[in-house]
Amino acid sequence: MAQRGWWIRGIVMGGALLLAPVGAWADKLTEIEQAFEAQQKSLRQLQQEMHQLRQERTAQQEEVTRRVMEVEKKAAETAASSLLTGYEAGKGFFLKSADDQFRLNIRGFIQNWFIVEGARKEEGFPGPVDGQDLTKAGLARHNPSTFRLRRTRIVVSGQVFKDFGFFVEQETSGATRLEEGYINYTYAPWAKATVGQYKARFGLEMLTSSRDLDFAERAVVSRALSPEYQLGITVEGTLKLANALPVYYGVGIYNGCGRVDQCRGGIDNDGNKEFTGRFTFSPPMSFGNLTIGLNADHRTFRVVRGNGATDPAGVTTPVGSGSSFHRFNPVGPTGVKLAGNGEGGTQNGFLINGNRVAGGGDIVFDFYPFIIKGEYAYASQERDDLGAGSGNLDNLIMQGGYGSIGYWIFGNKQKGLLANGRYEHMRIDDNKGKFTAPDSAKQEVPMELRSGTLGLSWYINPSIRLRGNYIVTNLSPHRNAVGLSNAEDGGVAHEGIAELMVQF
Image (cartoon, rainbow, N blue to C red):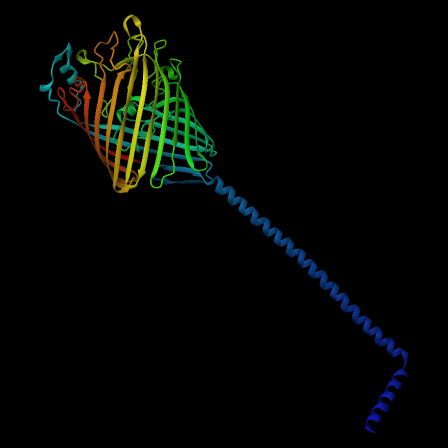
C-alpha cells in the first residue's frame, strides 16, 4: 500500500507540472541563457588578458636576452682590446692582447767570464827555429788571466696577428752590434719562412743558443766550419713521416758575407751566395729521445772588387792590403788563433781562395740522467791561384768533430747540477796527404788539434747559472802552441773558464 502511495503522489506532481503556465518555463530558460552568456564573456575576457600577458612576457624575455647579448659583446670587445702583462721563465717580460693575437716579449742575459790562463813561462820558449822566432810568437799569443764580459744581450721579440713574428737581438758589450734581426711567417707547422739576419741552418752546436750551451764555448770545429750569422731567407718546417717519424727540414740562401756590419755597405759585397740545408729526424726509441741531423753548406771565399766574405767568429776573413785571398784560422774557446799568429815569421792560418763545400752530421741521445751529443763536419776548400805561377793548389781539407757526455747529478736546467765532459779533434790538411804550402806562405803546415774539457754547471734556478770548465789542449805543430796558456815548446795548454750567467 505504501508503494502504491508513492506512485500516485508522483503522478499528481507530474500532472501539476505539466499543467503549469508556459511563461514560467520561458523566464527560467532566459535566465539560464543570460547567465551562460555572462560566463562566456568573462571567459573570453580572461583568455584575452592571458594572451596579452603571454605577449608581454615574451617581449620582456627578448629584451632581457638582447641586453645580455649586448653586455656579453661589450665584455668580449673590452677583453679583446685589453692588454695582459707578466713574466715567463725563459721568455722574459711580456705584453700581449687577451686574444693572444699580438705579443711583445722583452728579455736579455749577461754572461760574465773569469778566464784562468797558465803561467807564460817564457824561459821555456825555444827562440828562433827554422827562421821563425817562436819566442816572439809565444809572447804575442799569451793572454793573461782576466775577467771578461762575454755577452750582454737585449732581446725583443713578438708576434703580429699570430702568423707573423719578429726577433731582434742586440749585443751591447764592447762594440754594439746587431746579432739577429728577422721577420718570419708561419703558414703551417711544415712551412715557415724567415727573412733577415740570423744563424744559417747548419750544425747542432752553432744553432744552440749561447744561453743553452752545455759548455762555456762551442767546440773549435763548430766555430770553424758552421756559417753562423748571415743575411738571407730560410724555408723550414716540421712534419711527420708515416704519422710516426718527426722530421725537420730547413733550406736557405744567404749573402754569405757575415753580419750586416761585416758586409761592406750592408749588402752582398762580392755577389756570391751561400746555400745551406739541414735535415733532422727522431726515430722512435724504447727509452730516451734520439735526434739525428744532417747538414750541407756551399759558400765562396773569393775577393771580388776588393770585397770578400767574413765569418762572424773571425775564423775566415779577407787577408786585406789589396790581397785577393782569404785566411782560414780556427780559434780556441778564449779566442786564441790555433793555426799560428804570424808573429816572428810563423804560420798565420791557411790562405784560401774559392768555393767551400761542407757537410756533416750530429746526434743527440737524451736518456735522463745521461745526455750524449756528438757532431762531425767535413769541408773541402779551394785554393785557387795560390801555387807557383798562380796555379791552383790541392783543396784544403778541414774536418773534425766532438763527442760529449753529461750526467745530471740532480735536477735539470730548471734547477739542478750537471757534470759533463767533451773530447774534440780537428785536422787541416790537403787532399793528397802530402801538404803543399802556398807559394807566398811557405811556413804553412798541416794543423791537428786534440782537446778535452771537463765541466760542472749549477742551474741555481731557470734564470741563474754558475759554470766551471777546465780545458786541456794539445796542438800540432807545437810551435803554434808556444805561449798558449802554460804551453812551452811541445807542451800542452791548460785553461779554465768560470761563468756566471743571469737571464731575465
